[in-house]
Image: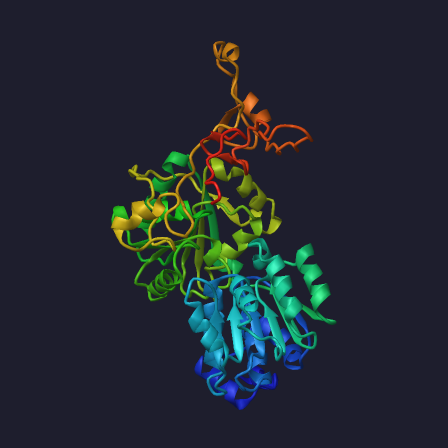
Length: 494
């Protein structure tokens, strides 16, 4: 506690820190707090588990006074991280009674609009914040502090344009703090454009490499799940996070584990926000020992006690590997990372092994003997599009029903022009596999399937439309065939 006192924090904040039983600040907290408390722009380069949330939360709490005007905006890449940060700010500002609001998609926007009128601090995802800007339901006039957390992750998720639009509407006279695990060229451009003489600080993760054991198994693809089940049964009391690259794989793994009696929960971006929050709470309370997830849970989330991390798929970006393994071996605890490598993972795992700091610590393990487990295809459930009466599903999914989007598979159409009878009587058209597609299509179709524009009419020509092979009907042609000037079905004027 003495080091926190030396940083010049108020008694109201120090009392909450004492209640949380924090004895000393982390490396990044100790380096950033003096500059952030002084109102300077700060750029923190820190990996998962460095304690950066408090590094920007404490200066916010110290430097603003609640007045029911939006004074602080914090941008995060995911809903879960927005909820987590808002809880931390609420916890440590309880003596100052700041009004903190988490803003993200997937929940009632009308309720958010009502609560935004009285918020002092808003923690939100770029998409929903931009939505409120377009609706003019959020006011940046009084924003004094702007925080961008996990900037590199926001860029990876395609939020770069949204972030710049939001920054454009923020007041120029403000304090800006940015945090990123890596400083890419895009992130560096953002820093130079939107900060003023920032103090740059780098800090190490709180993950202890000496406590972390990393291994990998080279296993055939059709035996990966069976090996995974065998390894899970060896450590029944372990708190396990399993990372997959796609939602489909997450559903496949979780549903097959449930089928054989292993209690597991899935979390990915396809679930509703309520379901995602419930799954995380169950896992944090240890009601569920196995959490199957995409990289939505790989960044920033504070989940204590994780002993094992499985990479069922190796991440496509090698930096995500570091964030995944940062879920375990935290605060001096032991941790284990198990990578399941099959032919689909060789390329991405090669990128991971090219990192000298990781190559030395990841060891290959010999495949144990294990029983084969039967598997079934995954059925998507609890998605944001699910719900409603089962009797309406066929009706809702049919094309043209209601005003919403249709998620049914479009009818397959052949865009190639018809061949003459002489051609059709010959040998069948040769097929080849396209380099950029997994489907087969003919050589003739690949040439003639380009969109063709309607030819302009020449003076003195008939009103008949030129023949076209476009799938889109022309303005003067019905879907049943081309119309002509001599044959009209329009109702005559009275």
